[in-house]
Image 1 (cartoon, rainbow, N blue to C red):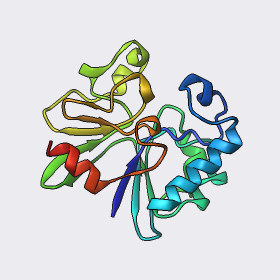
Image 2: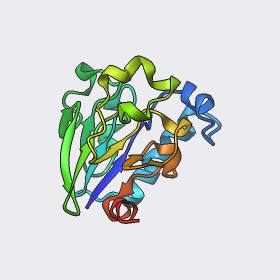
Image 3: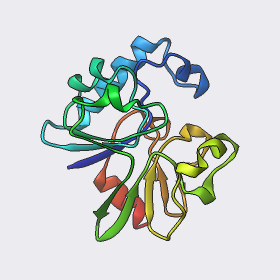
Image 4: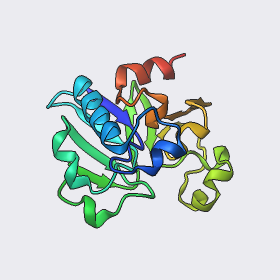
Length: 171
């Protein structure tokens, strides 16, 4: 089974306040993220993380089930990520339920808000295909047209299954 998640920000204490996460401190957040992840992801599953995994990845990636493919975000440092993920890329295309899907940290350029302007040059133009992304956390909706924002704040801090993605795509 494939799963999708973005912006866990392991080890980032400021993200709790910035995104109004329901955790008293970074340790509680980290443990909840690990527990939630491992409660749905099996050892043979694949997780596409749309970036901003957390720092240092070496402290958290080995505790998580599944094969992790990191789509790098603006907080990820490639030199820190090497050796901790099955694949590290800035962009990936896959097929889900017969549909072409872009995997990218950033939303489509056409959906950027003021939060996104300094990263607009890293975003894709909307080509009519589906996009699974993160970056904007809970400052943007879970779904906008054919874009699905899998930032942890929208998915109960738990990777979302491909079956759920298919349901959303077919609504």
